[in-house]
Length: 604
DNA sequence: GCCGTTTTCGGCCCGACTGTTTTCAGTCG
Picture 1 (cartoon, rainbow, N blue to C red):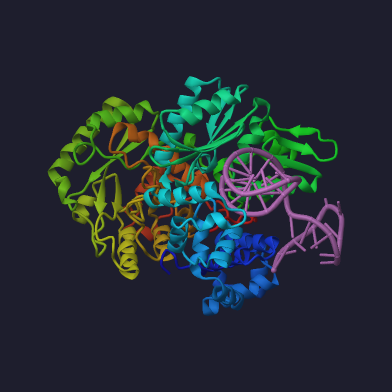
Picture 2: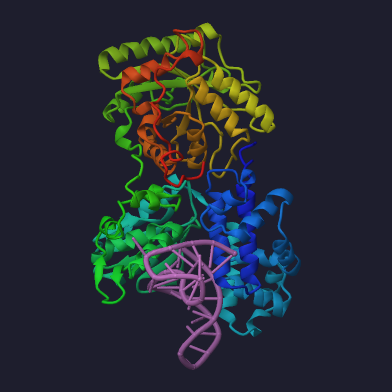
C-alpha cells in the first residue's frame, strides 16, 4: 500500500461528508456529532478498518451497529446507501459552502432552499446581485462579511508551517508584552501542541488590564484587519494574511484558560465529559462544582488534571488518541525530551551547501552541550555541490584534528543521494571509511509508488547506510511527500538496523508524527537531526522532538539519545559480521510502543 | 447514533462574538 493506502482515511472522509450532509439537511445535531466523532476515531484507529469484522469495528469508540455497517459498505463498495441518498438530495456545491467562514449548515441549507444556490460561484453571483439581504436572518453586514471572506480565501494560502507560525507568535507576544501590562502571555492552540502546520494562531494573555491588551492587539503594527473584538476575545488578520485569535483572562484562571485554548477540541470535549460525570463543569474559567458553584481548580493545568484524576498531559499528546485513558491509569509513556538528546547526526558545512565552516559548526555544537556531532556534507551525485573524494578526505583530516583539540566526539559522515534505482554515491570500500552515512532522496520525486518503494528498500538495506534522511522528501507548502509502501520500507529499515530520520528542519518535519507512528509499529529506530545548514539551525532539535512526542516515542527508540558506546555499536552495524541482519548490537530493547502497552493506541 | 460509577432511555461540552433581532440563532473554536 502506498502512503495513503489504509481504508481508514477514505472511510473517515465519507463519515465526515455524511455528517455534514446530515447537518445541512437539518438532521438531529446529536447524530451529526456522532458521525463526526466516529470519523475522527476511524482516522486515528491503529488497524486498517478494511480488515476488521463487525465486532472489531464496534470496538472502535463511537462506532456502534449502524456505523459499523456503513463502514463495511464503504470498504466493500466505496460508499453506503444513506450517503448516496443524501448526495442525491444535496448538490456537492452546497457542502462546499461550509468552507466559507460565517456559513454553517443552517445558512447553507437556507441559501440552497430559498435561493437555489448550489455552488460557491452561485453564492458569489447572488452576493453580487444583493439577493441575500432579502432572506430572513441575513442582512447587509453578513453579506459583506461573506463577500470579504470569499475574497480573502482566494488570495490567502492555507496552513502555515510551524516554524513560521512560531516566529509570528513570538513577535506578537513580544509586542504585547512591550506595550501593555501583561502578567503572562503564551501561544496556545495547535502551535503549543506542535502540529506540523498551523491554521491560525491562538494567543493567550493573563492581565489585570484587558482593555489595554486588546487595544494593543487590535492596533499593533502587524494587523491588517480586525475580524472580531470583544472584552475577552478578539481576532485579527495580519498583513501576512494569518488569522490570530487572542484570549484575555484574569491571572487566577490562567491554567484553565491555557488548557482550554491549547485544545485539541476533541481533547477538551473528553475532559469536559469527565468533569460532568463528577457533577462538575469545566470551562476556560476553571473547574467548578455545578451545585455549589465553587471553583475547584483554575490556576494551573496540573491541578485541573489532578482534580479530574489525571496526570498532567503534555500538549503534544492532546489529540484524544488515548492519552486521557493513559493518564487516568498512570500509563502515559515516558516521552523523549530535548534533554535526552546527546548530539546531532545530520549537519552541513560550507564544504557543500552549508554557510558555516567546519570549525564554526563544531564550536557551535559544543556550545550547545552536544556530546557528539556528525558532519554529513552532500556526496557528489548532487552535482551542484561539487564535493569530491579528495575534499571529503581533507575534511576528515581537519575534523580529526578538531576533535583532538575540542573534546567533542566528531563523526565524519556524508549525506548520500539515493538514485532512482536505489544506488548510492561512491564505492562500497570508500563508503566503509565513514563513521556515519545518511542516505536521502534529492531527485526523481515522481516515481510510481512501486518503484519508489524498491528504491528506498534498496537504500535502507545497504550495509553502509545508517540513517534514511528526510524519508518522504516533503517540504511544507511546496513539495508533497513521495508515495511509497510505508510498511515495506519501514519494515526493511527495522530489519536492516537502519534508523529513520526525524528531520527537525521546520519546513520539513519529516517524518511527521503520523509516519513515525507507523514506523515505530514496524519496529524501526529513529534519529532526530537538524539537517543544519547554518549555526542557528542547530537549535531546531525541539521541532524533531515534538514530532517524536506526538507519536508517543520514548528515548530508547531514538539513537541520538544513546550514550556513545551504544551508538557506536549501532554504527558498526554489519561491518564486523559482514551483514546487517546478524547485528543486534545497538538495537533497542523491546520497549513497548504505544500499541503494545495496553493503552488505547494512537494511530499507527 | 452512541452509550452507561445517576443508565437500555435520555441524555449528549462550554462560552464568546456577530448580526439581526428585541431575546436569540448561527457560527466558531
